[in-house]
Length: 180
Image (cartoon, rainbow, N blue to C red):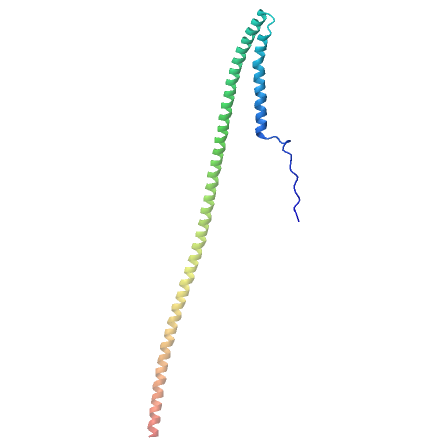
């Protein structure tokens, strides 16, 4: 059974980044060319020589304050950009400092808690070890007492055995004498 085919999407309605950038550059180029053409149009259709001179002087006066304003605004823009970059660097440094301080405090608290935990474990282990050693010495003393008691009983049994053996031998010898 064949899989259904998906319909293809139209690409014409989608704006691609390269086409929008080209459109922006074309529109800005058109604006620049229109601005450049306007002063030339004034010279192509002079109504009178004096008006053309006045217009060119006005254009120069307007262009020089405009260019100085553009220079000032460019300076202001540059200063604003520098201030923005410096502020961003300050925020970055502050964020890094805060992260470093947080890391150090967290690291210190974790290290302290681990040390406390190990100290508690060592204390409990030492108590258990001491209790085990006390129990071991008690058991070893008990073992020594039992072994001493066993040795005493064995020696006593040996004496009794030897005494019975002598008695038995005496009885056997007497019996043998009677039978002969």
